[in-house]
Image 1 (tube, rainbow, N blue to C red):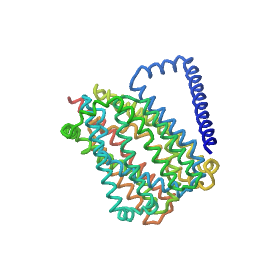
Image 2 (image 1 turned 120 degrees about the horizontal axis):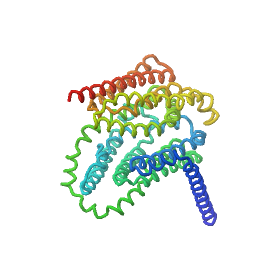
Image 3 (image 1 turned 30 degrees about the vertical axis):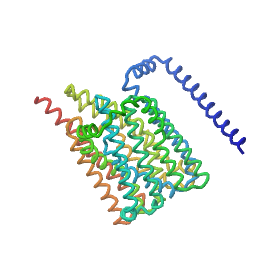
Image 4 (image 1 turned 180 degrees about the vertical axis):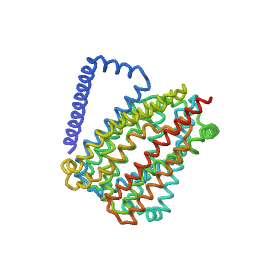
Length: 469
């Protein structure tokens, strides 16, 4: 048995080495071909000589590879698990995302701000202490209030998996803290490496555990791996570089940085709670109104319509933020023109990129993912309308740089209220799931239209103030 195991391990390692060599050759060939084009070569040189664009390219490539791994393995996963299994995972991940916001009270967002390394390392220590405290608090909630939590939100489908939430909570919080420290150090390559490992490790776990009929547990363990893989890599790199600086951590200094950056738990934390609720409510509401199978159909449909534009949307958002911030500093009158022009460009991209695959989804999905998922295709239609508007509007939603971040918070709260109202109407009318998603889509589209109006009003007000001054 040992010999066979050794042979299997050797063959696996050899296979991985061969795949790495093949990937390297393909990338090298692709780079040579691209460099022959003078415009492409000039663009590559500009990116490589700009630290911001270079960082975005490296991080974006890691995210793209991880997403491609997820897409490529989904046809296998959907044949190993049922829609109900995927629904359990969707509910689990939604609950984890909501509770996970409070892991460090958003102090990790401030990791890149301290000028002195001593302050930064004490902020890191503060995050670790807060993570331990909130993990203990979450454990007490699960220990003494689990029944109340399950009954209040109709979470019967994940009752037997609630303790996995604790593992995910701590692991996700720890990775996030280490990830922001790596961003401070501009260690983008290491972050990219962990992102790819997360995508590959999570998918591999789901497939292997699915083969052995683990059911929802296999998906949940795979999800945990996809959230926490890379902790050892980031921690080892930090310890190697900052070992001596850890001696600077003290209670008085952690208290000092906690006061200095108190705006993050005071403002960013509640804003993150409201925003996450808006994104994570649909699976929970669908579970309350229907069952985990419907949630599974929704989860797959949402993933399929979101993934095509997620990378482009994020990159456009960063580019727009850079240009808009520059115009704000220079008090440019072309700000409104930039906003409208960017909306038009995003609209031209969004409609074919998201709309065409969504139209074909009901007819293609059964062949790719199996006959059990046929209903997913019809869910893609209403969800695609929402995603198209989100793709167009979200990257340009930067009211905070015009001084109107309170408008954005009010809008976020209104969006949550609108979503809850839509699901409540569906419950009163006992509508089928597809009609409920249509109402949800209508609410979201309406809110994004309102957001555009608010953005234009904020830009106009900002421009008028600059003229007066």
